[in-house]
Length: 252
Image (cartoon, rainbow, N blue to C red; front, side, top):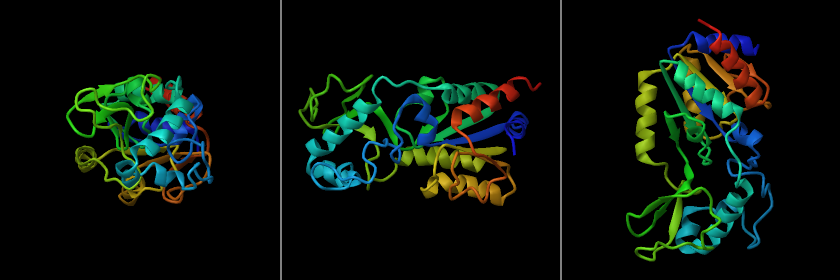
């Protein structure tokens, strides 16, 4: 199964859904610990708890300064990184295809930074901050200027990144956009750099496969959806998407 086959499938499509995970940002230097980087692996935090607990909604409500400690560490590890050629390829495909959407688990904001407009960042964007007590919002390039536990200049309540912490509900508005586009249907569904462990990430691929819609997976390692896809590219996102774009670009 080849990049050429994938490129021809996408070139012949009127609509495409690209589902992306941490693997697409690996070439940008973003650590790939389950979406927030390989900073912790299986180790516990300084406080002796799993990182998922430190980065959870209940912990943020109880001890926001502790959650912010690890949010700062993650942001600092990613600071200065930029979109890579895989993100650029998806933005070019969006411009080329009549209808193209990206559903991403990543909170790095790279898809929009690379030029994609139809983006469902289901877990949020770490560059967007909002107040937990009032309507204040802010978009920041990085966290270098922020206090260890930043507070709103208007009401003094704690600020937080506009991201879904562990144990929190997904944003209903984004789920509604996703469902609306899934209801319209896609000619091809492509999974890129994600282990597809969340049902809302795996199900669009599995549902498409069940209905005979072409499906493609780009991932160096097998995943829970590998058995179902029509075409599997066991490689990195940059190699695959740059190759796909070259084929689409030269297909009339």
